[in-house]
Image (cartoon, rainbow, N blue to C red; front, side, top):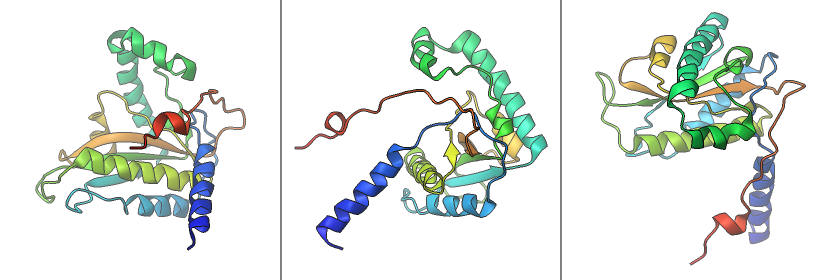
Length: 204
């Protein structure tokens, strides 16, 4: 590949990712499960500490399980927004029009719950877990966007109820919840600006 082709490929990918937006209003239209599986396969190629790949991707499509997930998440979020959220946080998220209500957890056809895998009866001690899982989630978001699906990264606090909902062992710790699907026809997306390259890239 020539230098020009390399630049072209990098620019094409960057331009494609620049169209990505977090979506909070999903259509209930089903998505091809093979697309989700391939996106998870791409996420699994992420580098990880000692190559231990300390991640688990739980793909939730069962209607009752999604309803339960929403119910428990909203209970935690209601408490957070009412009592624990700082004024600074509430001001920062105001442009997103987000609150304790999380209907997307039930409406989106697929919800991927990502877990960190820590040391347990059947799993070795991992290294750089959060860094490794964070990279994998980034690849997952990119892969799903490339395939034409919308996502949202949701982190209810605390998240331990996800072990119960997803029937996962104690050594697996919830990292992020990602509803996946097509945007609703009337989906509202905040008009947010991304920082220019000149502000995020430093040359030395």
